Image 1 (spheres, helix red, strand yellow):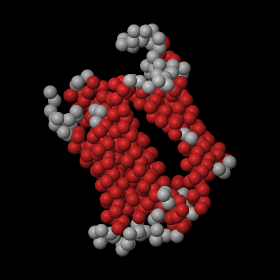
Image 2 (tube, rainbow, N blue to C red; image 1 turned 90 degrees about the horizontal axis):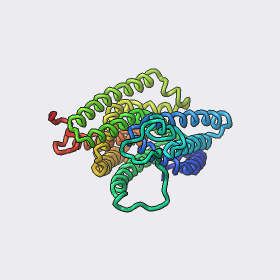
Image 3 (cartoon, rainbow, N blue to C red; image 1 turned 180 degrees about the vertical axis):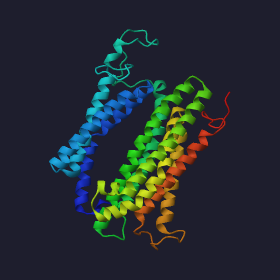
Image 4 (tube, rainbow, N blue to C red; image 1 turned 90 degrees about the vertical axis):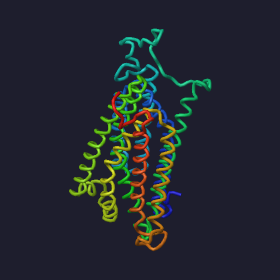
Length: 374
C-alpha cells in the first residue's frame, strides 16, 4: 500500500521493523495527547514543555547510541522514539495522579503548597486518574461529540499524508534507486514541514486556551483582540520560518545536513521552494486551528478538513493525470509525481486557510474577526 515494494526489499524490511516497534507506542502517544489537553485546560503549558523537552533529549541520546553507535538504523530510531514516548506518558500520568510535581502547581504533587481552588470543597489535592467504570452518557456526551469530530479531522489529514508518502514512493520514470531517492527526499521535506508545524502549533496551543477562556467569560472584545494578536504573531512567525528555510536552501546547509546522496539532494532541492512558500500559510492555518478549537468549532473543522483534503486530492489527480493537457508525462504516471504531491499539499493547506477564514469572519460566529468593539 505504501509503495515499499517499489523502493526495494531493503526499504520494505526497514519499514516493517520500524512500524512494528512504533506500534508499541500507540497507547503512550494517546496518553500524552490526553494529558497535554488536560494541562492546557488548566492553562498550564509549562509542564508539557518540560516533559516533552526531556523526552526529546532522551530520544536524541538514544538515537545517537542506537543508530550511530549500535548501527541499528531505522530500527534503532523506532526504539529510541518509542522509549522516549513511554517515559513521557508515564511522567504525565504521574503528574496528573499527584505523584510528581507540575510546573505551575495547579496539578501534581506540589499543589499542596498552594491555595486550594475555591470550587473544591475538600482539602484533598486535585488528581486526574484513569477509571475502569463507564461514566453516564450525559457526562461524556460533550467529550464524545467533540472528540469524534477531532478524530475524523485528524484521521482524514493523516490519510492524506500517508497517501502522499505512498505516491512519493511511486515516483516512477525512475528505477528502484530513483524511487528510493524520491521517498527519501519526501521524508526529509516532510520532517522539515513537521518541525515548522510544531513551532507554529505553539500558537495554536496558546490561542486555544486563551480564546476558550475569553469565550467562557463572554467577553467578545477580548476574544477578538486575542485572535487578532495571535494572527499577527502567526504571520511574523511564518515569515521567520520561510526566511530560515530560504537561508538553509541557498547556503546548501539543508541539502548537506540531511544527506550526501546526489539523487536525494536533487529531488529535495525541487521541494524546498514549495516548503518555503508554504510557511506563512501553514502558520496562519495552525493559528486558526487553535482559535477555532478554543471556540469549540470541532464539527465545522472536521467538515472543512474533509473538503480541503478533497481539494488536495483533486488537484493531485489533475496534475498527475494530465487532465488539463499541461503536464509533461503524457500519462497517468511520470517523474514529476513527487513534485505533484507537494503541490497538492499546498492546495490542501490553502483550502484549510480559506475554510478557516470563512468561519473566523462570520458575523454570527464565535470570533467575528472583523467586527467592531462593543
